[in-house]
Structures are given as structure tokens and as C-alpha cells.
Length: 178
Image (cartoon, rainbow, N blue to C red; front, side):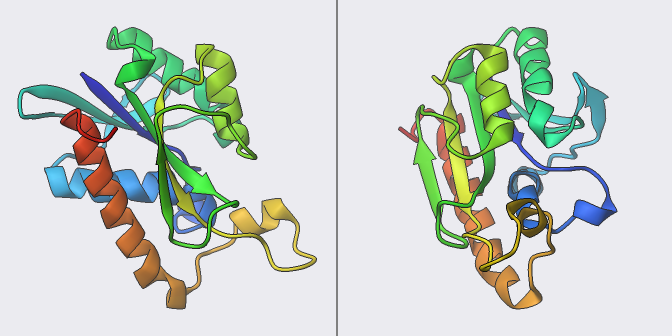
């Protein structure tokens, strides 16, 4: 059993914003695996598949970003999974744009959604993949930046980051990421 959660915000207004890196990355993975993320369950949209005999859940929380832990905890409980079965994919302002980083555990850093997940499931011991979005331009508030639309000129680089993240997620499913 593996649960892969992409963090983001729902609605057309947020569809291609920096804060939706997790949603966009799991959509890339779902497309690759032929999974439709459409079933409402555990405060999330969920898709299910099997990869090499491993049950895989791909989810996008329907909660506000800063309350993502509620959906993650419900998913872990419902599927009787543990944090070691969990991979969370999200944006990171401390990484260069379109770069990726994987970690087997760690703190939330500056990400409030991750902070809420860690507080709700009461551990930092779960895998995460971060996609860099860079820092806001001088004078632009952080919230405005992460909720701004990704410029069309930057989208090809992010598309590559989503493919790399999907590669890493597949390694996680197979137990080979770390």
C-alpha cells in the first residue's frame, strides 16, 4: 500500500499556480499510470490503481492547503496505512524554480500545509518530494506569489519537473526511492 498526496488548492482560480505544484505533479503521475483522480473520499479526490501488485492511492486534498493534515490522516486511517506508506508532493519556495528534492523525513520548512500534516499525523517520518518555485520578486508578498499563475514561459521547465517527480513517485511505489 502506498498513498501519494499532492498538495494544492482546488478551483479554476488556482489551477496553474505555484502553490499547486503537488496537484500538478500527481496529475502527471496519474496520467502516466492511467488513473482517474475523481472519487470523493476522506476529504480528498482519490484515484486507485495497482503497480506491480502494490495498491496505490493518488490523492488531492479538498481541504484548504493549511488544513491538508485532516485529509492525509483520514486517508491513512481509511486505508490502514502508516506514515512510511505516505509520499507528499508539494511546492517549496526555498528551492530554485522547477528543481526537485526528495527526503525520507524532515521538518515542514516554510510550508504551512506540511506543518499541518506533521502536527495532525504526529510525525515527520514520511517521504516527501518538493518542487522548487523560487522566492517572490522583491516587494511581492509571499501569499500573492504562491497564488500567482505560473508564467507560460516557465511552464516547460515545470513540466519537466513534474515528469521527474512522477519518476521518483514510481520509485517510491516500488520501494526504490530511498
